[in-house]
Image (tube, rainbow, N blue to C red; front, side, top):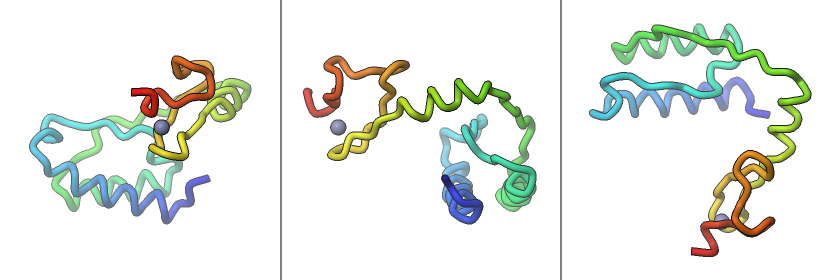
Length: 101
Ligand SMILES: [Zn+2]
């Protein structure tokens, strides 16, 4: 689980990236903020970076689906590529596609 302070640090890193040319038209944060305090922090950080949060979406997902998504994730120990055994399986089960190239 990502702690609040760790997530906030990630946000600050992202805030630096907003100033890059490819972020001027907008950006999407996926998985953050995860709660109201983080949302408030994000809004404050955005204002400091002369940005504005225009929309915040809360996706409500069935608990069984969440378990299915989380339990199916795999991370390659060598290249750190993340895949899912159901939604994005490698070409050869259990073998990272990046290592097969
Ligand atoms: Zn790999």
